[in-house]
Image (cartoon, rainbow, N blue to C red; front, side, top):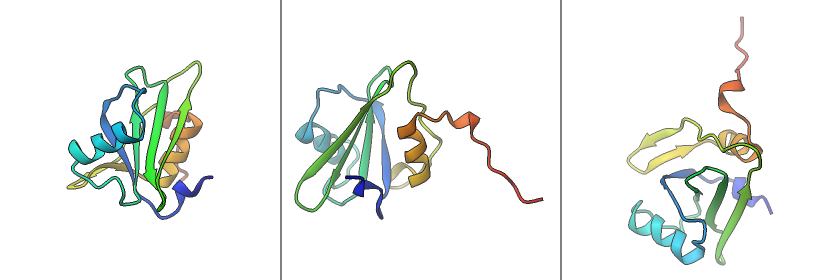
Length: 113
């Protein structure tokens, strides 16, 4: 079920999306607006305007998979990611924090002294 965490890159779509979009609509955004192949195995993450709904689209080898989450009583906080010629992407740890609704400003990394 959680095989979207294995050996993939996680791209954040930079605009809000109508959450009525399904497989064809989301894969069309990836292809036409991000200029990427939605069947490459990477995970593409979409949010609604209020950032209370999130969908993740990826190709598992046989077909498209969509995971969705609706968060209650707060909003998804989009983490700071990396940008390169492929787009805006986050790490697997940032994805897990995002899914769990962890606010990024409350996360501190312990440094060695």
